[in-house]
Image (cartoon, rainbow, N blue to C red; front, top):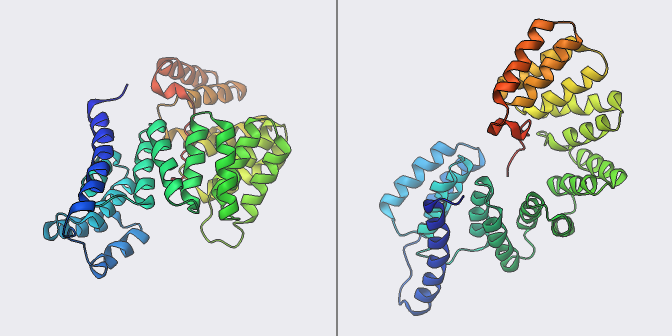
Length: 322
């Protein structure tokens, strides 16, 4: 259910855009803008993912220029990266009082709504962003992700393909296209998409673990466990804090009868996500198959205790976002 504060952010942001458009048409002066030179250090901090430093610099800048839309919008971006979507939306709303948001800002607002799992509002702002900037690959990618989360598969496929027409080697769009193919039972095309996304990263220092995980899961589910494991292990190396990856490796080891290794992987997954029912159930099953009856009973009891809780949604897949 939508909270009152959430509703107010949505309404205020939309109203502020309308108000600022009318104001800009009649105002004889322009609101104070932060000199680009003063924001260089902020942008460097953001690029280096030093978000607390960037936030401190921006709040200091706001004391000097409280009506600068650029500073408010940048602060909104930083707060998004800090996973504070409500605070981020508040800054985008303030910035919209002084300048009509551009496509970049609308993508930022939509990203906050994605974090809040409000996909209807996210799609609304992303659609506007693609209308303002039809060649913005990131906007099309995020629109596809939003549509996929809404189970609007056809629209998501079009958005990912549009993103790839603009940015031919967009890794995220390619493996998400693979998810579309997998969901619609085009499994050969799904595997091809995952393999492309992996190949495109061969010369990149920091790899996105998701296509390795997606391909490993697809192969394991098709019974090709030996082929799946190298991809799953590569996913763990590239993204060592994803419970889903540890769980998939454990399930592979279980299928191969390597129970001790499966137990190790599941315990690692539980360190990352201790209240996930499915992980306790899997661990209980492996303990039982390994002949460790009492430990199995304990895990099954813990899974029963967690049954029906939010954790029952399944093993979390901590995909890198954005």
